[in-house]
Image (tube, rainbow, N blue to C red; front, side):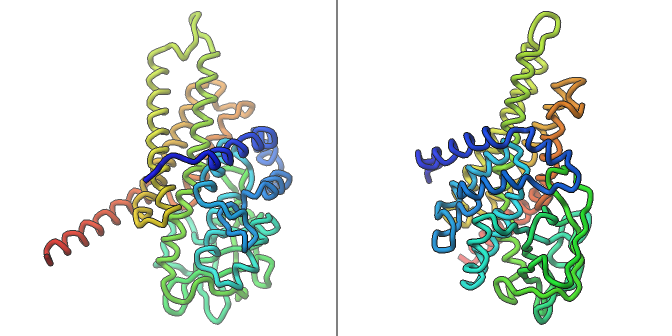
Length: 379
């Protein structure tokens, strides 16, 4: 196992950081957040598409860059550092990945080139209300190529034109591809904690859709997709946490009290050191998860859980400490701390909370132990 990125992969990350530093300062995120009815920054989205990032893991035969998931997670980390107000996680980590993994050749030929070029924005509709989504109790129905039900909230649901919808089929959960401009689809904007990303409510009334991946094994496909997306989104969280720590450190070194930088006080040193350790622990988990994702290793099921939980904790802690260490100005609108806090909370809730991923990790570990115990007993 080699956890060191190659020079070519580091070059991809360096290029991404240069591009985003030039084109996606925090003022871009703030502009979308403060613009009523804005869903994302279209200019940045177009630029990111032209860089080939939206199809980084998509084969060239399907219009992508043909790189791989290791390059994709490094790009995601830079997207997170910049707090880029674009539907990257929804479209790339969830919708594109779902079609890439489970789509028929015809579906791949139809949608992947458009998604990779940024001509279509995708999303993933699983939740049907507050709390963690449960595939076993879906109320949305799919029958005879028609979807009926309500999805809430749908990440970047106002910006998207295509959705992968999880619904209850005739033989269990299924995934379905839904053109959001189809008859029978009603979209309503709902309030988002991070207005630089939109949330929507989808009302589906006999809306035409097509099956993605067959009528059986839908629950397993959803679990696989979420594991894969958790790694990519985790790197976006990692990037945000790292940038929040860097800004906070610079502020603490430049802010004086009693004649010396506040960073020299022991209490702040400890808090910054603890935060650094938390981020690096998440990074270690992330590198392992990225290796499992890119190599197709069975360890992905466990690695995705531990990384997703660690990355959520790291970003939320970094955003909270950022506000605290900035003192009285930390919670003001003029400072950027709330941008990080909003994004940390939005990403943490996007595909299940940190606690739900910990619960899943325990469930999978217990199941693995049971399988091992059974084998030993049989021997």
